Structure formats: structure tokens, C-alpha cells
Length: 88
Image 1: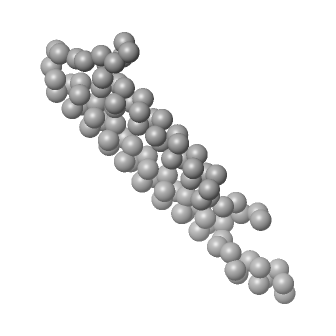
Image 2 (image 1 turned 45 degrees about the vertical axis):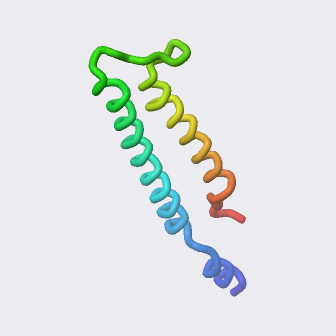
């Protein structure tokens, strides 16, 4: 009887997975959209003139490296602070 009450109190495995999927899908979609938009604005739309930062094109720094680092930080924070395991 106690085991049944304990299972009813916490969300099920499917609910946890679906919550994490929604977060990851939204975060990845925003990341891809912003990365492509920034790369296009700073790189392809400029024509032949490209600015460089520490030897890298500015579009690569602002459109690839910085968003990538921010996504790693965001997913690490989500993984360590927000995500809950199915075993507690």
C-alpha cells in the first residue's frame, strides 16, 4: 500500500521525459534559429567584407562559438539543478 501511495505522489517516468524533451526541443530550436540568423547577418549578408576576432571570422565567434558555450552552460544548469531522476 505504501508503495502505491509513493508512486502517486511523484510524476511518472513518461511525464519527466516529456518535460525534459520539451525543454530540449525548445532550447535546441532557439539555438539553431539564432545561430543561423546571426551567422547570416554577420557573414553571408555582408558580401566580401568580413571582420575578424582573434583570427576567427566575427560571424563564427558570435554565431557559433558564443551560442554553443551558452547552450552548454544552460543545459548543464538544467541537468544539475532542474532535472529530476526517476529514482529518489
